[in-house]
Length: 310
Length: 275
Image 1: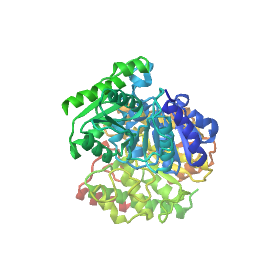
Image 2 (image 1 turned 30 degrees about the horizontal axis):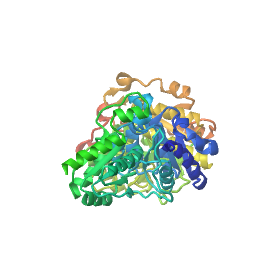
Image 3 (image 1 turned 180 degrees about the vertical axis):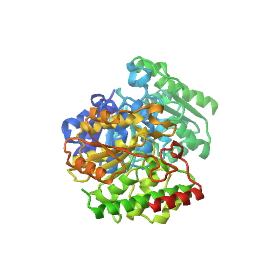
Image 4 (image 1 turned 60 degrees about the vertical axis):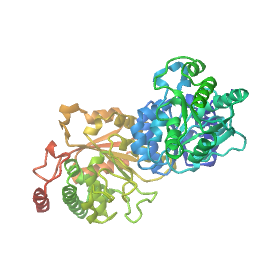
């Protein structure tokens, strides 16, 4: 198991801090958990804690951006995108301000804190906002690439990060490009399109399926918005079946984003691996991933269901 | 103290702003005249006396900033910006109309001179804090001004921002509360009292000044005092009359979000010009 994406986020912030003097970092009393404290240690004069006040966190970020700064604002995904949704909409996206919302502890792998802290709708909420770019890095290396890109790009960005360790899947020399996915392996019978913590299990599922004679393509769709429509269409045409996998509600997230392309461009059967419109509960990340159907075995089963429908 | 000449200019501009608020809202057939008229004096004072802004360089990084946290008073901001020369006065008659720049609430993307998009209450003051913080980080000399509604103080975010501004000693931030006592559903003390306003901001660590919001000398003295305050943000609580300048609108909650008819408009404009 590799590092958590939040760990990589802290280190990546320190890197962009060195090269981008206008980068400032804001947190809402969770800097030890979000790892923005790494930045604080190196650049204390550019780090600002707003306290437990997420609405103010987002709007202060908007004001800083309006005055020429490049604010990276962090909290848990639940609060940054849920509690402060309207601030993100009206103060950041509507005026298209250069605010980077990098939220950690997304998804069910928050674990023991339970349902109140497990954000399963943030991808859906964020991608529905005009001007917003939505990115879900799969591992530490991709997180670093995404943060480097975000510091350069001018406009609102939502980066979804996780608490728990994830499998390393990103090849060396990778550069993040919005709207471009990454094919991790090729196959002809089906394509698994995954993001975030589910990319590792998707790769594992493909290996299992291959052993059973089923050849599967795997795509890491980190850029949820803009989405890589070209790769989706190509996969639909060449493999005839798509399985999406995400640590998110099956409503509104990656699966929906892929389906929006598929139904318009090249209708093929789809299967959706994700949380099935329910809240989570307390437990270890591993237990929760199993109970809520987010494992490699669930992706294997979904792929077989899909193949039966082909 | 303002010189007689300065005062006359500010009064004259405030009158023009009031006239254009009434005309613009009438032309739009909707909008918020009451809470726009109540801040015409402070808007005139800020843009024609206090603030360093240049209509030819609306994005000058060293300019003073203004955030209308009570975004529904957009007609007052637009009339002021037009009077200052940021865009033609005639544009005011296209307020709230499709394919024109003047949105129902302030929009920084389309309107020259608007420093922050606002309208959802409680958010503007936070953005103003962000701008003031940026100024502090850079050691810039610009100042940030913001006007809040009294009803707006019912939004929890205002108090998050109030805590933040004092914590980071944002002395380059001067905010005003338009204390006209009325919100949409009526008297603010009946709907949800935010009183006492002065004691609350004092307790949050602000320098607080209470003035007659229609007394230009008092407003000028308050801004001067705010500029001299170096360790905390300043809140100027302005006792104002909603609909100030148009007798039929003064103190009437009903004129919070209602446009005059053309006939009423002509009468109100004549009344404003008479003074």
